[in-house]
Length: 435
Image (cartoon, rainbow, N blue to C red):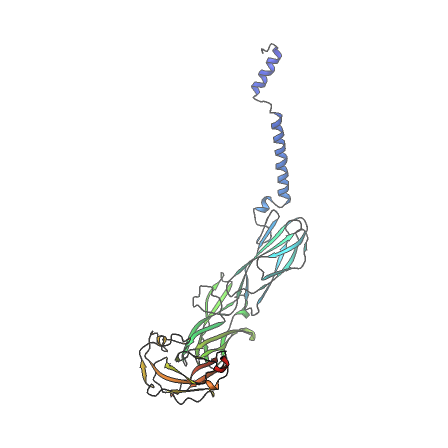
């Protein structure tokens, strides 16, 4: 449509020259709603402690605040010379917000840690104390613990701790750079009668350079069994750990055990005493154990005879006795062990030699071995003797068992022992009863 009005033409020309145009009404509404939302979000961010408080460290050392969460990272705690198994520490709990906090729940990252608050209500920018009690962690291995305090307002106070237990301890490895777990038992394994074994261990002792009373001054060792001897070396200072915050002293502990003459398990204790200034002492117990091998090898390993219900005759079982080290020997007179049991050596078998291994000669023996004391050879030239075991069936009831002792002419060796057991079958004991 043509414009004929001169005034209208002039207004349109002026509006076009200014370059402005009116926005649609729906777009104006969108902009208004966006501005309101941005303003509300900013107000919430400031109220909840956001802004720069969420990007920089808070006034409390090690504390960070963002939104409704406050995280406090504590410096590592070192427990020095602790003899008990409970660790206790107090930490400060700070409320960084402008509102009071009421703690409703306390949670720890491990079940071994038990936190206790002095007060569950914390005033704005106020503080309280929290006591932590935990089971002591292994020697030299830091444990990281997180304690979280949840408040009714939705705020959370998180405390991060690193706890390390440093005390005198006996460790297996000689590597000074690794965190070795402490040991409380030394097992020498299986030893031959009269054999000695030795183990060299390392003793680590930690101390606080700021507290001279925590610096060990000496060590002594106290064996508590006659088969065990022990000695401790001189103390030596090694490099400090954790940036010099903890010092370390080491020494060597040598433990030696000598096996007895009787087969079985043996053990004893050693006490390592660490001495501190002022007369304070710390005792480290160490158990030493070993087993004594049997030098006698039986074939079969034991005798078991099953009798018929009406059997009254004499049963004979031929057994072979060998020395694990291949030492020739003779059997002395065997005393009667029970009215139903007797045994004797077979004449002419005293010096019989066998080239097979003891393991091959006694496949069913639980005590069989193919090793000579101090030797790793798979076969030995063992000296064997034959023994006749006689069982009087008429003197046995339903069940009988006896350990037969066989003495030899070896003065320093214990008697060989053979277990003999007899069992009578259940049933009718005479033929007339059967018919």
